[in-house]
Image (cartoon, rainbow, N blue to C red; front, top):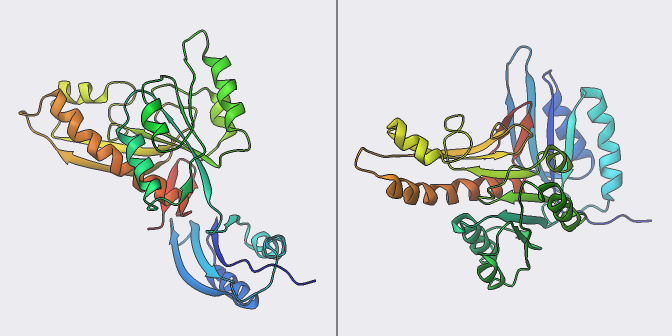
Amino acid sequence: MPGDKIGKVILLISCPDRKGIVARVSNFILSKGGNILQSDQYTTDPRNGVFFLRVEFDLSDVSIRRTDLEGEFGGVASEFKMDWRVTYPQDTKRMAIMVSRQGHCLVDLLWRWKTGELRVAVPFVVSNHPDLQETVESFGIPFYAFSVTSQTKRRQEDEILKLLETKVDFIVLARYMQILTGDFVSRYPKKIINIHHSFLPAFVGAKPYEQALERGVKVIGATAHYVTESLDQGPIIEQDVIRVTHRDGLEAMIRRGQDMEKTVLARAVQWHVEDRVLVYHNRTVVFI
């Protein structure tokens, strides 16, 4: 019985470095009739390091089932002790957005989605405040508000998890000003992206612009990272900075910083959607 036409495939690999990895992977793709479109690699240490590889290849002219392709590559993966995954660019990822009262990152993501720049599906937006409901619904996207207090936090998280269940592939915290519980985070490992309005590890937690002003810094930054149970300590995907001077008050700092937050978050989300990020311990390798 003939298989299905798969189309484009992305293969992401990390494993102990040794000779022959690229040749073995390339020969496997060739043996399946594939054509390599792009290949990027990195080794942490040429002698005893970890090897990272991202390969994008095309199987449009080949009839093979995804399960068969992945099953057969499993033999190669075992041989080299690979941590690996296969993704298919034609599958649209489902992105839930969580936000509080500040809408600059949210609106930027929704505009990129609406114009086709960000190729995702947005099934809904979740907030702990009703402020942005009209804005979200103007894009034709459902909006759900869950009022979160210290007394209701766990119950409301359970309700949010029910909403997310089976409906999303990853979550973006677009200035969602609540600390997620460990139970919530554990449901979506390496699948929750947060934007922190500081150049981490400086000024973690709340009010980093106020901390930066107090410290008299000469640059301010923004950091997009994967969320872990440790506050603002997850693997960093993208960062950027801009210069400030003693003439910049708090309002000017926040205004300039928010512009940067939008672009940093958008880049991180785009790279995640395109499967360009490999996590190793608490670091990332980003193939761009």
